[in-house]
Length: 431
Ligand code: AMP
Image 1 (cartoon, rainbow, N blue to C red):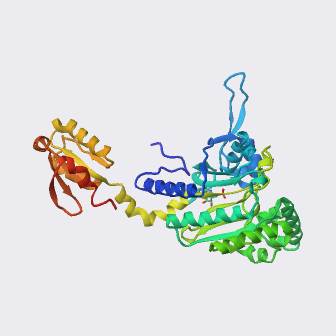
Image 2 (image 1 turned 135 degrees about the vertical axis):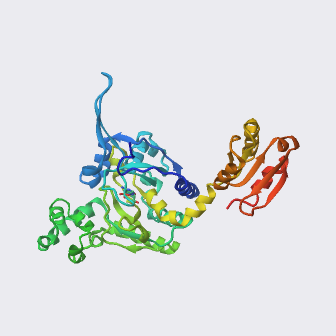
Image 3 (image 1 turned 180 degrees about the vertical axis):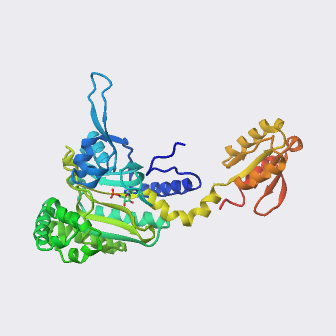
């Protein structure tokens, strides 16, 4: 038997209804903040991610699905392509390619779609997963650098999680400063690590040399007390970054969005500057990050574009659904039921049943169509599983225009004129 590839999943009903619910709410919230949707290709030139995400990151160095795409004609070149591991680089590439920054307007773009990383699969971590993300980016004159943009994005995320009914989340916040601040901090860390690093894990010993900032990501319990004594990045920030961050936190206070400061939140991608953040949820287990993001003021230039500061986030849709699934399971199952199952009494009534189904569907109802060769008992069993009502269509009903309808939740059987059927079936309203 051929099975789905390790780390990939099939999303089946009724869980798919929860996915649709999450996407519908996300679209509504993005709309109310005046974001528009962008859809970028699922594969891009490998170089985009090497430059935009950073060669040194785990994503680029270990996790990408990359292949040499052979030339099929003399006019083509063989090219290294990669399934996108994240969407920010693609969005910024598209904005540059379509000259979106030339308008002078702030670009507010959101996306929903699959991403690919060759990670070790476990609950909440897959090789194909879906992200819902958004970016606010534009020339400095559009106000893209303002700390208000950071606060608005974070306030929007708090609203989105609330709208989804996800409670108990924690917003962790930090500022990693400008590229120069980060470089300065890296050197401070490097020096501070010299006397202690020999007591740390092998990974930290390597990171202390290659990229000291990454020591802060270490999860080994024995290393934690040592990491707690290291200098914090807040002390390496210049005046401008410090003020920027103070305005972000003051705006969140004003809007009543709760957060905690986490000096160790430096995030996995190289392009982050200033504000970085993560929303976590206790119910998720080891993979507890619902979403992450931050400011990336230099990314457009790295990708050959004009100066265009910005801020964005990506949320793991798989993890949102996992968080919601238990609570929504029953409701989703109920929502999966059609309003009525139409049971033709005999194959000669199949065509008439199709016409009745069409009539009701055109009036906005969800209809399941039975099959005239079924015995009545079998139709009732099938109807009970898939619909709130059964509508019996025999020769008599067809001639008289009076149909027999049974409501499965009340058990009551009623005669209903065909012209009133749609209204009758729609009430009581669906759960
Ligand atoms: P990142 O781009 O790594 O910051 O990821 C942003 C969010 O995407 C994370 O907080 C997760 O919710 C989700 N995510 C990242 N990698 C995976 C994965 N392999 N499987 C499922 N969700 C993921």
